[in-house]
Image (cartoon, rainbow over all chains, first blue to last red; front, side, top):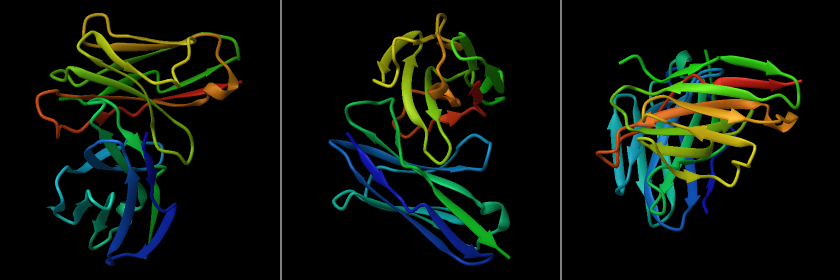
Length: 111
Length: 115
C-alpha cells in the first residue's frame, strides 16, 4: 500500500512563494501527480513527475526525489485565486489505473 | 472537448434507497475511473475501466456498489440500499491510455446526501 503525507494547511501572502511538501511510501513507484482543487469543484491537473528532478510550468514547479520518497510543489508569485487545496497523488507499478491521494494541503493566500 | 460530465450534480435520498450516477468521459479517452471524496480528504479510488472492461476494484467497493461501462463510453455507478456512510462526493475521471504520463481529468462530481 501507500502512505502519503502532506501538511494540512499553509498560509502565505499574495506575491510570495509557498512550497508544499509530500512524502510517500510505495511498493513500486510509477509516477506522482499534483492536482489543484477549489472548494466544491473538480480536481484539476497541475504536474506530473516520474523521474528525479524539477518540472517547471509557469508559476508552478514540482520536484521529485524517488530515493527519498519526496516531492514538493512550488507556487511562485502567489495570487488570491491560488487559494485552494493541493493534492499529491501517487501511482504504483501494480496498477496503471489507481491514484492514491494524500488528504490535501489547504493553501490560504492573504492580501 | 467538453470535459468530463457527471449527472446529477446533487442527489438527496433516504437511507435504504438505491441511487445511480452517470459519467460521460472526454470522448477520445478510453480509461474511466470512479473515486469517492469526503470533506477534508483526498479522493479515494473505487474502480476503473479500460473501454468496457472493469480492470480494478477497490475493497471499498462493497457488494452494494456496482459500476458498468457497457459500450466503453459513458459509465454508471449504482449504490443499493444506501447507508448514511455513503454520503460523499462521487468523482469520475477519464484519461487516454497511450502514454503513462497522461493525467486523469475529473468531472465536477455528484454530491450524495443520505437522510
